[in-house]
Length: 544
Image 1 (tube, rainbow, N blue to C red):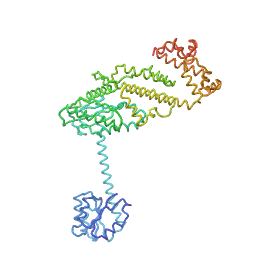
Image 2: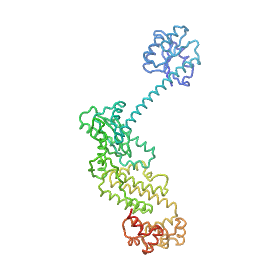
Image 3: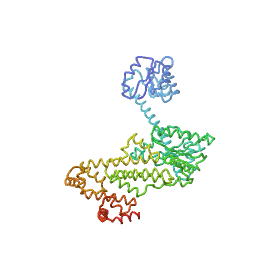
Image 4: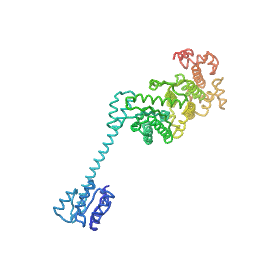
């Protein structure tokens, strides 16, 4: 809505103008009235109007003089002149002074006033659109330059481009960056995969953007570029052209990054670890600076997890792609225990994995994080295969509870506890689903089998423990599980025997441990279910 100032010494003329049209209906607002030139000048200086409607014939300062003053003061203000005289001199002088149009008072009515106002409005609209287009072009140009700079420096740091001169020219010419005392900083969000594993891709991008926004709000001195790399890792290029002491720069930067670390934890409830390179006066060393910062970050992250510092000092260590720590047999054991809903065995396998982790000489913090990610993937696989809803089990750890759980994963011991709890969520949901699918009698029978499979159990003993007849339990079991009681027991015992095979127990000891009365019967049942003999199964396992 455009602001209009009316200037006329005649109060009747002013009132007539005010009531002539419904101003706001046509996107105008009467912002003020003045009786003479000096009053108009004061109003214009205090509250700039978009349009001035003024009388040419006023005592003291004439309309022509006021027009000239407005043109000198602010040429963006449009004005429409009014007069009782239809003379060529008045028309010529007003138009020479920049008036958008000229109206005679004795011929003034709503239609010709609106015609002139709409002419002024069209001019203002075009001017506003042009300004917005120019501002948008400038913003797009700045954003394009910034995005190009980020892409160039990212490629340089990751070793995908060696054109240092091109990067330096772009930073100097388009961003005005003076490359003196340049420092590369790397920053890692701890357990990024775990924190974002239940988020959609769009939610993950919002999460990344919130981290970048908070970084900029912390106003790290010397900051020029801050951008996302991958898997929760960010990088920053800092420049301190006005500082001379590298020690003072390093001390100040460390203090500011510690402040950033606290802000990330306070506002976003995430932990970060950072590494900073030494200063350099050209980008020729940027790649090596990035590797040095990454090594320092890895050192700090590993020390955070295990209390052990890395000892590697080569480029290969920082550049290597850490291998998976989780072994295939451990993955198989977990999947089997989960599918059998054997909580004790699940806990035992998790304990064994983390015990071996503690005993190993881990050289990369990323190895630990990858292992944690793999453990989550196993849980997700079971969750998905069992059809436990369209979400991952991580959705059960929502909002602050999820972040509170993530806090526990800052040490290996905390990670083990968290993973155990995570698997318990999956097991609880599997059992809940079974409860919904089966009658209480069948659920009690399955629980009885799981608790007593290593003993000499039978349909009669199970029915007696539940308090129903064997024939009734047999029919219920067949209808709901699609297996007879004996078939289910045999399948469960064979599954447990395969776990014992994986643990290296001999065949002669296994058949008794899982409840079979004789080796021959165990041999027959195992081959019927698995399609191979126990010896062949063990042989294939050893070959893997």
